[in-house]
Length: 185
View 1 (cartoon, rainbow, N blue to C red):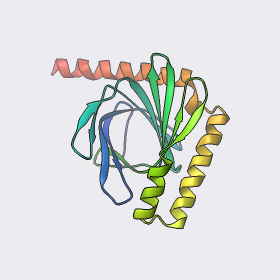
View 2: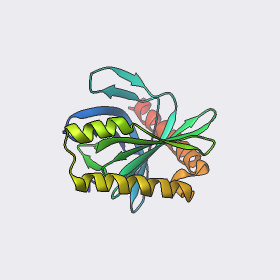
View 3: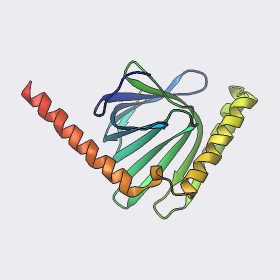
């Protein structure tokens, strides 16, 4: 894997099964490297959709990308609590300073009150049919979704609000250091 260090700034590219880019984020600052995942942060970052339209995220986010698990997790730090947007997706790779993964439509949305909801099942079924997902792929997707729900129900660190706030403070410090370096140049 590419040699990375805390504070490195990458981009994110999300693809669909057919190889077409779906969405890209302008920034992901590396906050931590674990054996099985990496943690990134961003705030009000530029997002470009496949159709060409763009927008900015509204709040800070702490993102967990997994090396061997079929999902990634975005902890959105909103004023009324932490919301999670969990994408069922391939394990990530890093190429050309960019985090890349294939999104498989199903999303798990977790609310501050602890409730969760599975989203985009119709989109998943549609893409499964038109892109002819193989049985092995559908199996990996279902295992990923079940594993993700179990990890949430067990209250693992990746779903810990204090940990996200710790990472957000780390992100803010790294951004300040980057700004100071730019001013000195």
